[in-house]
Length: 246
Ligand SMILES: C[S@@+](CC[C@H](N)C(=O)[O-])C[C@H]1O[C@@H](n2cnc3c(N)ncnc32)[C@H](O)[C@@H]1O
Image (cartoon, rainbow, N blue to C red; front, top):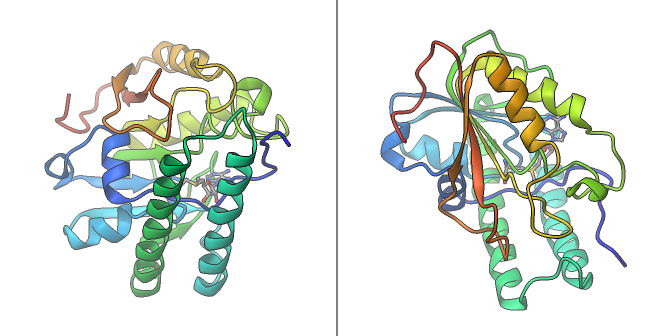
């Protein structure tokens, strides 16, 4: 059966995976007000707290109890990876898939501990309307949601077109409203032949027309077998400074 999803799964990356996909080093982050949107069960806040960072995550599933999130996270990691590996159009080398799954479970465990100990760092909310004032953050990191949850026909994972180009434009402008710099990953299509996801160029053009500096930055981490078009999108808001990282 061909791989398709009907919702965004509760699936998160480890600290090292996140830093690699956003092409950042630990030292780039100190002193910044950072938003992880959506955070899902990734390890950014959990590991960020250990490094004394000023970091918050937002996600529409943070209104659920810790037990529900833990159970749902485990189930979705296992079932989604099974489904991914069963479709010859998406399947990876099994060793790579097993390692990918192991790291997702590791990230989930670290999320669950931090969510229990620091609930104030996890804010309920969703794009395209975030519960923050303008310019609340120096850096917004947005991984594995935008562009990924377009329809399969457009290089995403979804069985429907609910998150179309208009949603993406609104969501990215919302991230720019709340943060001086926005980094989004990935920009490649996650299904179909290797290429950019279809909304990437129009979103980048629109944000340039709004006056922002928008460019691709090579990621420093490879997700599974996605070796081509492996760039993040960086937006530097007109008149603001974000990270010092190039
Ligand atoms: C795959 S996770 C990404 C987690 C993390 N950023 C990472 O890279 O591993 C996708 C998340 O998107 C969240 N989500 C779904 N709809 C959303 C929306 N409208 N706005 C923000 N987040 C949303 C889901 O709850 C889910 O936790």
